[in-house]
Length: 313
Ligand code: NAD
Image (cartoon, rainbow, N blue to C red; front, side):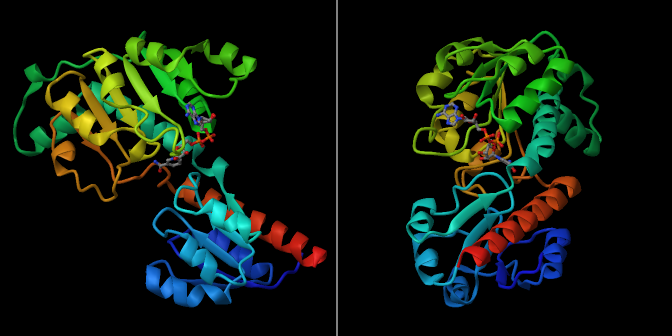
């Protein structure tokens, strides 16, 4: 399949996808540090714009992208792209939903074990020369209730691994959950209130939309068990960070493991600095495997769509 066209890559992506696009005949400009102003100036020359989560594709960028046919997100969430503006201009918006499933799910499980067993604190104290064994009584995952908010690709995978750790799985979603999956992990479907009241661990896996923004607010946080741990690898805005800070500071909940923040890097230093919070800098899909898969999946989709579009016009 031979196609032509220019691709602007605005964020760091794995080389595998770049090679695939070049092999197919496309000209690729790799600008992983491009800023907003430069993007608006350059974007008119490209048929394809590729981003991860750093670059914001606003209405202004889309208006300037007079030749754009595809906006591609190497990753899952599309909240950094103005999808409505793209639709008006008949620009296809694509992502690589399949690429992050293992990477994010494994980070969630790692975070659950880490926070329940105080691993990061133990390590930090050991490095200072302190042996604080007596202070480090943790909690086991086995037999506990894990509440999945959003039972999509990543949520389902978290449930599978958690089941293997002998956890009980609760799930809340706005769309039906397949019977096969319910049987596979023994999932108990609940409403959101029941989930937050019953779970020992709560893991968020919904996209950030106007419906999910601050979905976990002060009212729901107040209903949680004091022993609950919250894991968020979805989007920071899904939790009201100020309400979360107040709950954690007052020990109304046991802890939180956060990979994502309302503003990234987080400006809410008080939240990040709490002893019952562990943080990572949005590394959910930062694995070699996920990056390579994401970039090749996007390249394949771009080649396919460009081929179809060139045959239509
Ligand atoms: P997905 O689309 O497969 O699943 C999302 C699920 O959320 C769907 O089942 C959907 O029905 C459900 N949902 C949507 N709105 C809801 C609502 N209001 N209430 C309840 N459920 C609702 O997406 P996924 O691949 O599982 O990814 C989940 C999220 O994880 C993404 O949207 C993205 O924001 C985030 N993510 C983060 C990283 C990271 O690096 N930390 C990497 C990949 C994805």
